[in-house]
Image 1 (cartoon, helix red, strand yellow):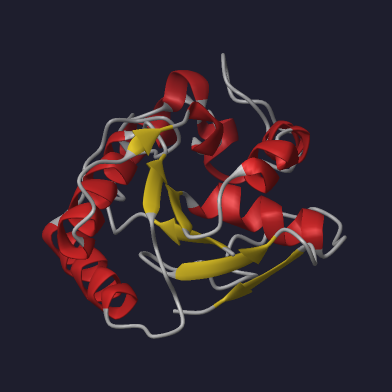
Image 2: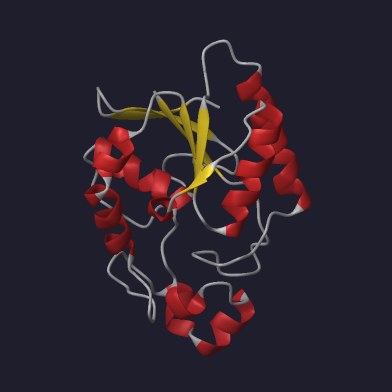
Amino acid sequence: MLYLMRHGLDDETYVGGWSDVGLVSKGIDQVIESANSLKNSDDIIINNIVSSSVKRAEETAQIVAQIMGINSYSVSSTLKEQNKGDLNGMPIEEVNSLYPEYASNVDINTTYPNGESLIDLYKRIKDNLEYFNSLADGTLLITHRGVINMLYYILNDIPLDMDKGKFAVTHASIHEYDSKNKSIRKVL
């Protein structure tokens, strides 16, 4: 089994995407709690960690590795969130004034300036299923809600929509990915 973990809470007054916004103290606490749950689980064995290269994910990976007693982690750009292009890391207030069309009128086909649309993220994750399937059992992937959501849509053959909360991919939540049975479920 593979496991996917969403990073902890970051400063949500900024656009996420590929931004370098770090974890806030509540996010650090969330990660510590989840990492301790993993460490104390009799059912989940983690042997290595692969993280998105985005700052909040790498910070999460560092905390989890330390708690789990894993000496290092690797980084993969495949695990990056939707690229919000010019809006990455921009204060949301600024987006609302400079790019009002991206504040409320986005749909799955809306492409961010110099970024990607949600359907682009879906295709990117679908095109990289072999990457996920090639990873060794016991690997923990530290990634983002968008990436985990795309796996839920793809593996359950659900039409893509804009409902970010559909699969309960909360901060620091853990999801089990069974590549043999092509299934995913929330476990912590």
